[in-house]
Amino acid sequence: MTLTTVVEPSSPVEALPEILTRVVAELHDVAYLIERIEPQLLELGGGATLLNSPESMKVMQGIDLAVQKTRGLAEFIDNITNEISHDWTVDVATALSLVKLSEMQRALRGSIHPAHSQPLAKAAGDFDFF
Image (cartoon, rainbow, N blue to C red; front, side):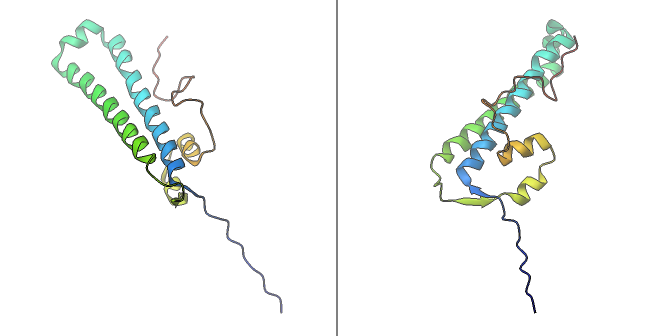
């Protein structure tokens, strides 16, 4: 009689500070992409006209608030990450499977290592009409 051992692939267990550092980079990317919307809106709507409309001003203020909140979350997570032991590990397999954007999934997995959090090339959400 022969016994066959099934070897399960190891789960992607990583140090929590490393994972959180990648989340911080993604949050900075989100803030950058949101921030890029504002000048595009000013250009499309005509700066003076757009800034004189109360509804348009609310939209512009909402964009600014979204950028500030995103950066604030990034700074908060970055700061507490320095207090977390590298001995703390997390299995990120399920969490990664829930991320729908493949580029973000790769970034969070650590498959890509950007030199900085802001993309050098145009990304989805960049709206140049020239």
